[in-house]
Length: 72
Image (cartoon, rainbow, N blue to C red; front, side, top):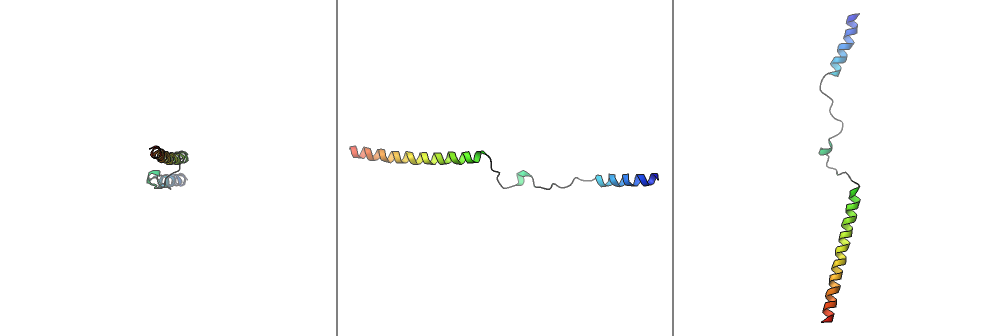
């Protein structure tokens, strides 16, 4: 009877020992997809605002040059 009780214990120990299982998903560093952050939309809006300001500055410069040319 003692031998029968020892057998499941030995089988359980053998099943639990060994190397750990391989991870199911790939690590985050290996992933090439970029994760969106809450700041992405803010950065896009900031870039659009900078582009608009650049356009406004260019138009103001052209208008000032026209006014300067008209005065002379």
